[in-house]
Amino acid sequence: MQKKILNRNLIYLVIFFFIVSCSSVPKYPSNACKLFSERYLWYKHTKKSSETYGAPIHIILAFVNKESGFNRWAKPKRTKLFKIVPYKRPSSSFGYSQAVKKTWELYKIETNNPLALRTRFKDSVMFIGWYMNKTNKINKISLNDSYRQYLNYYLGWGNYAKKVYKTDKKAIMFAKNVEKKSRIYKNQLKECQKSLDKKKYIIF
Image (cartoon, rainbow, N blue to C red; front, side, top):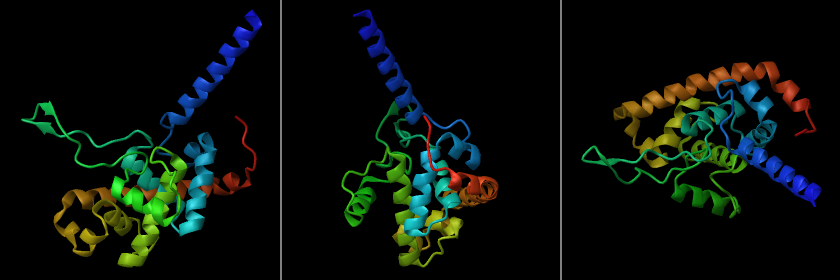
């Protein structure tokens, strides 16, 4: 009887640590090689998005870093009434990609993926690849142009076409940060991508 209880507790403990490890933010979010070594499945998911939609891995990763800092539960901060009382959130952005509900629903419909979740990394990077691909088709922005791709992601296709970014200093700043981070990730991946591609088995 005691042995059964011990085994059951051990199973619960393993499940607990597995859930915690899956939901926690990576230890090295600024280093693509260390990040993908820690979360190898994330590399496989990001690579699949890249192969499906043509968006570079380093740019997809830079988007996730900027949008949520790799926090699956990320949400915009609530606004405040009279600068004191917590009020509504400024948008429905949520999850790794910070996709808003309306655009996420469009993604699910167009990709025939009704079970996609914004808190799932696999779905989030596929969403970013899909969005970048549509940006390329709608506003003719190169998939390698992280700066203009992010302006579209942040402002939306319509606002980008109206050149709203010309008067939006915050959007310009964010896009420059993404561009800089994507270059860093790109250089880092040159050192480890071949090694990552060779891995076929995952040991937990």
